[in-house]
Image (cartoon, rainbow, N blue to C red; front, side, top):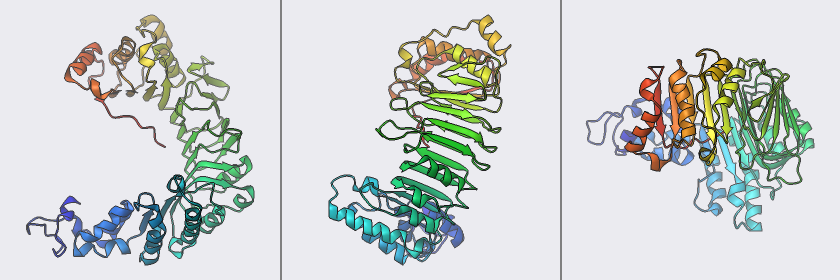
Length: 450
């Protein structure tokens, strides 16, 4: 794309700025270039028209990806800009995203609310959306949108839907059905337990479900033949509202990922009960906020109450630990004996206290068996090189024969050759039992995104 951007408007395809360079991108067929343009942010897609004569018609004839977020500098200009795009674009809109909640929350007048309300009404009724595949609407509790009526019109064609910051009433949800929907996100939505279950049941092809900071219900029961991923985030901000307390996976034969996404600082307690999920491979739970049951076996905090029970399907475990404990992790490996990846999210202050994690061979090998450590990947956030952390990780360096990658999340100020050299020595990386293992120190922050 950089080469294409350097071309003069009059250059023929395949000729660079100096007349001799080859522009491979412009040699691609129009339909393929159109698919690429559709994947770009709205502004960037529109800007491709100035690259060269060959590109001038491509954006307007490509499926439209219209994201209203950040489209204009002043919100007063948004209704006119979006309306012009919808009426003038030659190809149908494939993706439409509008976030009025963020747009209107600061300093909006009543006239602006009314004008934006009318604009959204016009957009969502537009014929340009008749073939829409992905819809994202973040509204405002101040605006009176009959959102379900709009969604109902599009429900038979939508494949991705994100609904945020609105009320979904029982009377409007009852008739909704999404035969092709594969991904559904409900964010800061007020919905009753009955309507939520009705909505999920009306998505027979649903693969990914996110329930983020939504309220009005206490329990979610999952019975789905298609779901592969579930993420839930319970927020404590909604006072005097029903909040999610229990997630029951009754029958989910395709479920592979189950993620409790709350952050420690504002998390709410959640009881997760897994009755039937034979393909569950990835699990994230919070030690202080999650109680999780697999049949009769219960994990409360970081303690497994049944020493003989095992869950063999889980291969990836993401868990937060305020106090890094080798014995605790060994117990979890006993409960999840096929675990291949362990991602430990540490508190910012967890490195200041905790056990020494010294290796006691007889006790710990009795727990896991002789050198029977299935872990291939270990990620530790907030690595500081404390004695507790070094002892914890050294155990796996010297004993995990299948280890392939160990990643340490460090602070930027610790990213010096002296610090890294000292940690390599302390961790005894030269003596690793897995000669193919790689060790990666990174200052990149691990963003737990949905």
